[in-house]
Amino acid sequence: MEEAAAISSTKSKEIIESRGHIVDKIETFPIIVSDDIESVSKTAEMEKILNSLNLMQDVTRLKSRQRRSGKARMRGRSVKVGKSTLFVVSKSEKLSQACGSIPGIDVKSANELSVLDLAPGGTPIRLTVYSKSALEKIEKIQSPHLELMVSVK
Image 1 (cartoon, helix red, strand yellow):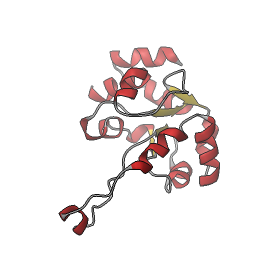
Image 2 (cartoon, helix red, strand yellow):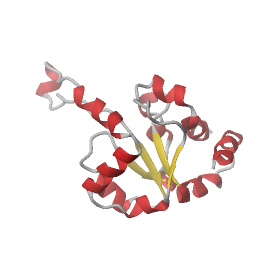
Image 3 (spheres, helix red, strand yellow):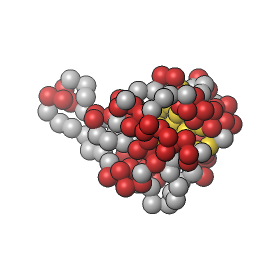
Image 4 (cartoon, one colour):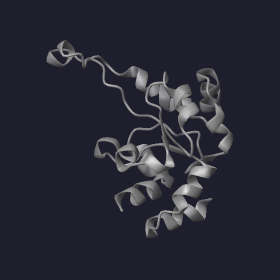
């Protein structure tokens, strides 16, 4: 049930901004793209897509993180990588390869989506991009929270 509530709240710009994501140039939520994104396998192509969707500004905000000192650094945890955009697709193999070297970007298939992906660390919601086929798989989940999400399509 928590997963359904987390998915349905990805359409609220206010909640997404309250988590710290930079979404100034994006008008509509949730962000829905065609299934062609699942065939992208190169990082350079993925960066062009992020620029065209106005998501690159949210990725660049992660570069301003400071290094930690003390015991955390001695134990190999000197850099804490934040979370940026989550891509929910039906087949994640090629796209996850393209997004592997971009910090903060995660790719999940609709079948293995969990609350921890949508609200990492218990902080509500994450900037999420859905493919059309992933939305069709999410439609099959029976929940009153998702009725709003299905009507957006």
